[in-house]
Structures are given as C-alpha cells and as structure tokens.
Image (cartoon, rainbow, N blue to C red; front, top):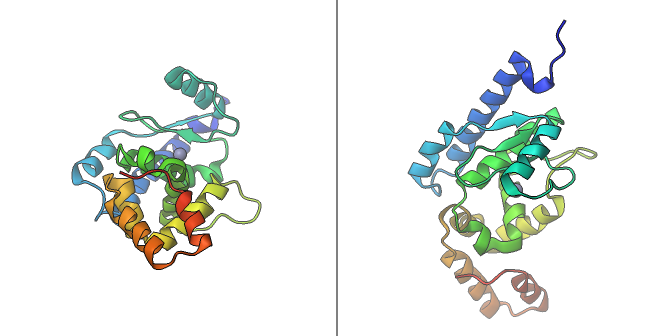
Length: 199
Ligand SMILES: [Zn+2]
C-alpha cells in the first residue's frame, strides 16, 4: 500500500477539478449581467491548484514574499491560478468560490471597496454556495461579511456588483449621496463614513 496525501488520490483530484469548474460556471450564471464576457471566458483556462496546507503556505511565501497568515485556506493573485487548501474538505467549495470571485472581480474593486472588499467577496461566495455556514463550522471573514451584507441592503445589490465586477462606483456613490440627503440620521451617517473614498 502506498500512502498518499489526500490531494493526490485520483477520486479527490477529479472532485476538486469538477468543483473548480462548477464554481466558475455558477458564479458566471449568477452574475452574468455584471461580469465582462472576456473575463468569464478566460477563467476556465486557469485551473485552481489544490494543495496541502503546508504546500499552500510554501506557495504563499514564494509568490508573495510574506509569511502566510494563520488559518490561510486559499489565495489568488492576478493572472495566476488560485491556490486552495484541502485540509478542511468541507470548506473547499466555499474557498473555491471565494478565490474564483476574486479572479472575476474588476482590477479596481479592491481599491474602490477598501475594507469592504473581502466581506463582499465572501457574501457573494456564500450566496452562490446557497448554504449558510452552520454553528461551529469554519467560514471566512464572518465579521466583514455582516458589514458587507448591510452595505448591499443599504445601497442595493446591483450597485455593489457594479463596483465589484465592473469597477464602476457611480451607482453606489449616487445611492449613498441620495441617502445622505434624504435621511440625515446619525446612524446612517456613521454607515456612510465606513466607506472608503469613491471615485
Ligand atoms: Zn479573499
């Protein structure tokens, strides 16, 4: 008998590859009105890499020059494959969706959304996953996600998706300006102040 790492068994390899393709398909389907067609078309050609958490940490250091943060489950950089840890198998679909969403995001989304960027990525990932994390399960960015949910509710999901996928912050800014003039309440003002400057 030959001992193998979980990522090396053929059945799991097939499962990961299928999951990766299904994630791209599901995100494309859900957000097709926002994602530029050429970005969506090129993504299946960059299959994600599924790695042990030890290998993931090594790749992270090699690609970013920084020590991997504790609990890292995946990462992606522009124009290169996403890296996904297979340590917690139950969490793989969520991580794949999260990293694939980063790849489908506009190159300006991170700058425009600032500290909301990870939370919005996570909220969109869970929406496509179609299943809320259960009590006791590991999930990414739970606090940031709650903030992202408030923002999506406040300004409308479309305005957030326009920034995220198209780098167009105008509808979001218009919604915030409208709210600031119509409802000058203290709580609302605080919400607005949480946003980074929009262009
Ligand atoms: Zn992320």
